[in-house]
Length: 199
Image (cartoon, rainbow, N blue to C red; front, side, top):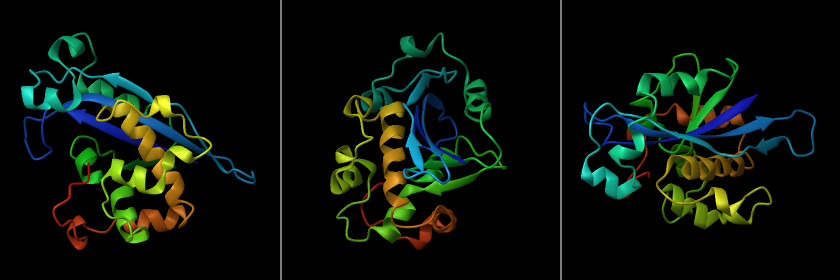
């Protein structure tokens, strides 16, 4: 079994019908049954995407991706196809607050783990549930498999997917993957978001 943690950088909010992906990142967790360490985390993979329209200045200030950087990159349709091209049908996608990623990419045949929802249930003692806040709360960088050079810069798709993969690994110490899938199916409205965002 493979769990692919993904992250997108985009030209705007998911609610904006004109918003599109401008960078894709993913990090794979590969399951080895009957092994003392059942999951191995791969290196992050990322690639820029040409969204087909100019990237607003406000978005550029968040992730630093400019129009010049993406002009020779694949289009969003090609970028999305690449995410599913080399994985088996029983693979699982993971993201921190899946509602955002699913606004741009939602293949019907795959199940999803939402690390935000799962952390809300399994880590209620965490002061905040944003990805970076959970990374610091859990001290993910202390994990033996964690390589700091893969975790920066923040707000780029590859590093954020790498942190998300390590968060999935920590959540799997608290619950089975079946339980994570069940929690992830609950509507976002059933969770108290208060004033925090999931990013």
